[in-house]
Image 1 (cartoon, rainbow, N blue to C red):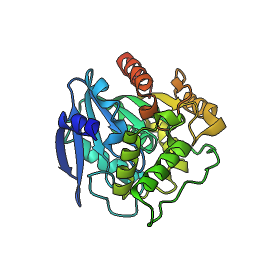
Image 2 (image 1 turned 60 degrees about the horizontal axis):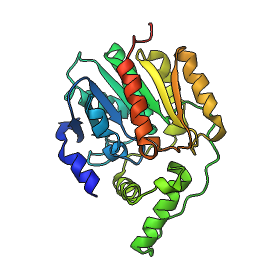
Image 3 (image 1 turned 30 degrees about the vertical axis):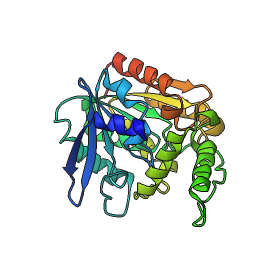
Length: 281
């Protein structure tokens, strides 16, 4: 796809070993470091519509986390804590300590982002959670997805992925364009990390008290993973961040950073430019 090639051509690519493999990092722009972490079955391209607008203000740093995209898969068992440890170790090769940074994590990436923030302490100024799980909160009932069959034609495969995007990821069918379908197919094909029950677990909830960064949140109002339980997310995060900046994007689904990119980019810039003091110890 043209947009993917154009955005990637503007990046500096870094390959950083982590023991049994390597993590691919891509970097755009200059300024204060902003790390973007993608969702499950994703890659850096989950942020394809956000990177360049944010890179006009920040040094935007986006990995393919281990087991996703072009990065090597970590050894099993696959856990959120082991993945966060690898990200922290590798990040030191991109942002040298003790430099401060911000983190924004989409979905599964928000879980890992929270664990990374807990490990980095006051080095992280702001942590933005976007449609993130790991909070042990009620999920919406999971609707059945279309299965990809071996005898399907390429057009039938594309249509099945388009329908699955409508069911789980993007609320407005008009926003499910050819690029979204292409990214979904490619990212699923390359995903090897077994996220399993991590999104429904309490792994981020347990890490919240150790996070010293300012916490903010952005959710789509029609997030299929949340359903009628969006307010529960706000209340829980407000219990650890009393002045919580929590924003909903009306009409948007789970992949809010793609479906409502302009609104999310504006919200991210507002949250990150505001900065603010870290949470008290």
